[in-house]
Image 1 (cartoon, rainbow, N blue to C red):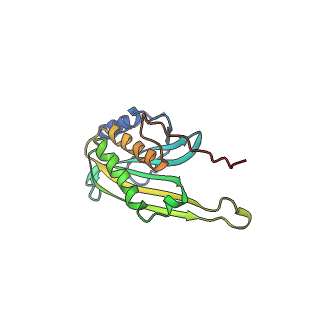
Image 2: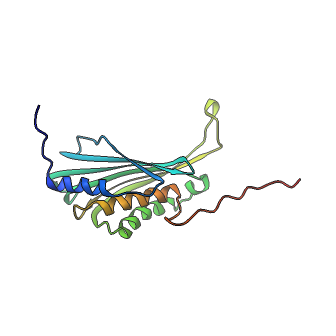
Image 3: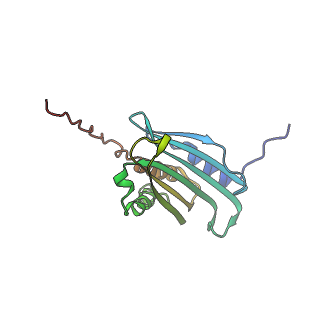
Length: 190
């Protein structure tokens, strides 16, 4: 049996930072297989966001490490994320939604002190209407945020907390410590 391959210290510290952070209770994290062709070393987490017991958003965060560095990354580490969430149709149709979605990411990184550079990505909003045998709700909306950035240090706990903040924002969760008011039920007059 071959001895385990020693991981580069930079990558090992970065993975430890991601593993050390504990998200809010509505966000369930799980280590998953990482793509192996993007960089010599990779680590990935998936997330499921629950609101009132229902899955309302999902995401994946991938850590890439190339000890030789990567010109486009402007460093040796790169974080890549994909987040998708269901939205109310009127929100998903709002032309300002992509800008707001991008701000959720950049603000979360700033608020958590997750220092970074070379950030880029896309925000996609979709509306779907079902027909025929798939007929169901009149319409459905989604937002999808894909982004990547280069962390400026090896402590990635702030980046994980920022990613969890992004997940919470896309899922429409209230800020920590705030309880959402119940939706009023309209009762028709008798």
